[in-house]
Length: 210
Image 1: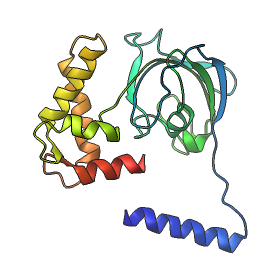
Image 2: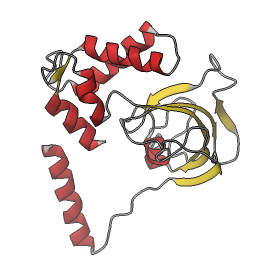
Image 3: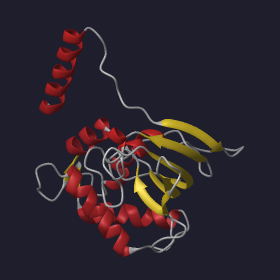
């Protein structure tokens, strides 16, 4: 929290010195398809299932989830930097079945360093289709449902039980390996004092920062 306050103060000082606002990188969003019926829209903390294509500025495709690897759609949690910042910004308020084109500047993609086949300072274009939206374990309203023994902290077993129930509720077979990986990711990011539990304070603090 202290770092957040200091960052804000530094930014405010720079604005006052320069006499103007600091420019912020933005994602260009184009809706390619939106279903007629939309029962819910994506928000930070939701788990999304997506297929995507990635392109360089010259139009060359560098990735296609339907053609590469296991050719499966990708699950990730929106808003916790599991993906590039451009996705976290550009995939909010989407419907299941919606398709968007995102043009992501380097500052919201892989920046000055690049990554793998992505050169430094690359502006990237993604065509992304959201196939499914689920409540994520980080959504604020889920805490009490996850806290099975009402002790105001979440154990690893409680998080895994919640994930298993969510999969079953949506008609998917439990996937212990995926549940374990997701649980470990959650604890690595949210168990601030590394005591093996996520307290209500840790959980709420992280959620509010999303």
